[in-house]
Length: 496
Ligand code: FRU
Image 1 (cartoon, rainbow, N blue to C red):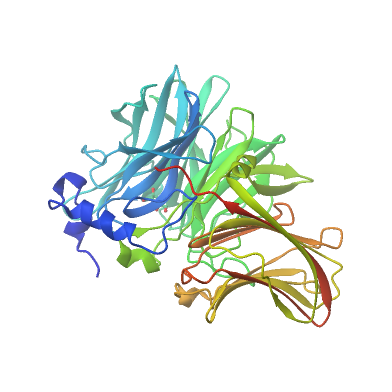
Image 2 (cartoon, rainbow, N blue to C red; image 1 turned 90 degrees about the horizontal axis):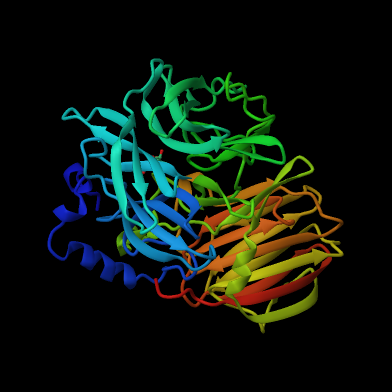
């Protein structure tokens, strides 16, 4: 049941008595609640925002519409963690309660200055004719976690750009602060612009990032810029890219370009191809931060805009991905699950088995939420793979074709179907790593994250199996392969 615009733009204090509590009761009964992912108590979660380390803790906010599972008025919801694994719900971070963010506290980022955390975000407003007008707003959080708003810092969209102008990502370089903002030119092509500030309050338009993609989709959302290994990386989520071979299969994309460091004066960015960050079905609007030990960490929205999800009728929608560490190795971006996640490991199981042209259902290993490392070697088959969440007519299949050097995730039989118009398989190229394929998997009640060949490729998806679809099966076709499988139960998180 679709909500009306009036219903979608109600803030929490305009809710009916007991409305939010009823949604929470509904969400609590959902069979697809996650056990080790950040998810909303009820309502809809989308982009990660304000990801940072401040005052001895990680802070991670997310876009949140509390009163339903469609995209309504957005809040920033606040979570924090000392270890990137156990997250504590901290309540509302930013509410859309001023004339500068009346129709949503949209995405943005965080940076520390003088022992305060500055939260720069887009205030989405609409006039009575529903015309959009974006402000770039600023709020500050003190070390007690108290957040207060400052006046907006960028009040106008520069000439040449439409009202699709949002998602500031801020960083510091030397004596200046910079931010990139996702934009749409008036000719309806997407791009990123940059501003500079000496103090986080006064911002000067520096120009548009000069890339080699003058016409690449109609809007670039959630840009992020950082440097790794003396190289510049621009990450963004373009909309309006046509599918091409196995690429760009989702409604919208998220990816990156690696180049020489961005010229902060001329905005020139000399870069390589746009590459997708994730080759699965459900991944969008990621954001990175720098950990105190120098690691570059990334979290994404484990969901997609404009797609109906099976929990939409259960009072909640979406979750965030696990945090990943980014590195550049031999010029290639690698993404690995952060090493802190090993803290969740419980009981360990191990099997080593040669499979020859058959399906082999494991008798000693199964589960609904676990971590698993699968190493496949001595590959003599044309197709090798693993079936997860196997149950009555259900399975989520991951297979590799050595001759094509291709890895495929098939969710056609994963359970409750979704987004069928975008297809039921996703594939990406993957070279053998010294003759082997390594799959590092994180399976939660309703998601799967696959890190292939030590972070060279990642595939992320929501799946909605029956609770008793917990089997795991290994298979090969036209030959044999040797599987080495280690699984860890993941201990459910602390109460949030
Ligand atoms: C991306 C996005 C952002 C915007 C936010 C609103 O999913 O559309 O561009 O700031 O979501 O919730």
